[in-house]
Length: 82
Image (cartoon, rainbow, N blue to C red; front, top):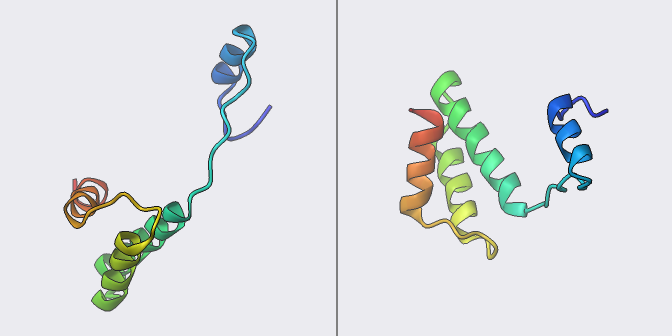
């Protein structure tokens, strides 16, 4: 049994004779995490706005990213200020 997955979910997949879905890695996820960390550092510890700007642009510029500036700003509002 995995500590990350609740028992009820594991039981459900066993009852249905299905394999657990596997998480897919995306470099954009790492960039989003870096953006989140920069925002938290800025908002809670006086971190530099430049770090936020660089991380924001890195998400937008990555070839696998589907984020536009508007959508990424919306995500920031929902995740950090909602």
